[in-house]
Length: 103
Image (cartoon, rainbow, N blue to C red; front, side):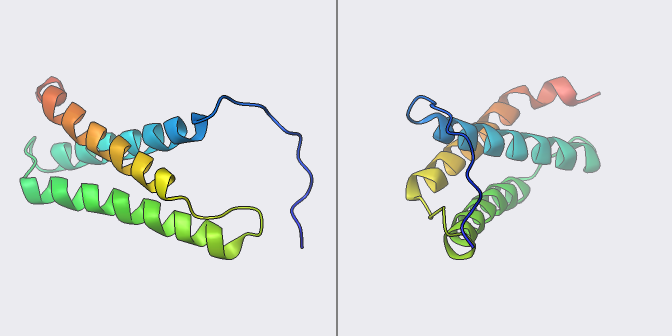
């Protein structure tokens, strides 16, 4: 069944990549904050790697599903790269300011 017709919105090129970057930045940043607070204000490297890998895997799965489960969307490698860029930015930003969240 084809998707219903939706009004077209003209956005500047690359806007969706910024959205991907921002979503994964927020996901990783707040996931680290949660882990940081749950572990007595410590965050081990293996936790950060797990969070980063989780974000990357989530982004890849979503891209694959939209390609296989919809007729109007297809997977995009650049979306995955934007996701990963946002996740890395989230890791580095949190590492720089995590002291602000400690008691």
